[in-house]
Amino acid sequence: MNKVKLFRVTGEIRKPNLKTSFKKEVVAIKSEHAVEKVYAELGSRHRVKRFHIRIVKVEEVKPEEIENPLLKKLVAGEGKVGE
Image (cartoon, rainbow, N blue to C red; front, side, top):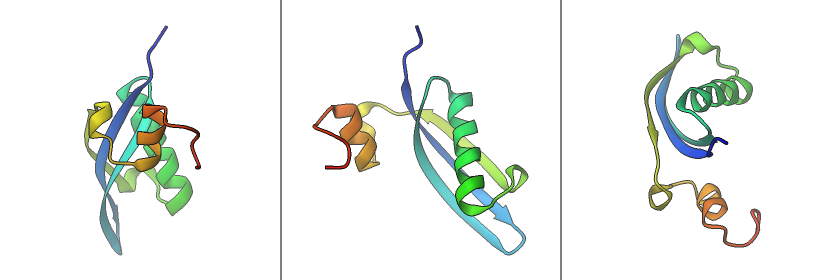
């Protein structure tokens, strides 16, 4: 059985009139799954095509290094998410 891990995906969006950096933390089994999730999320939220997204780095994150407060609460098991 595969264990779920937390990944931090860093990259940039490069459109003709926009260039912006991003850093997203996602839960996935493998780093490839984390990258796919970021592609899907950015494409859905920001209407960005995959060829406009450049992934710079994918790294596994330890529970004490999580920056996203929602994920930190989820991983720590402190009550319910949304409280």
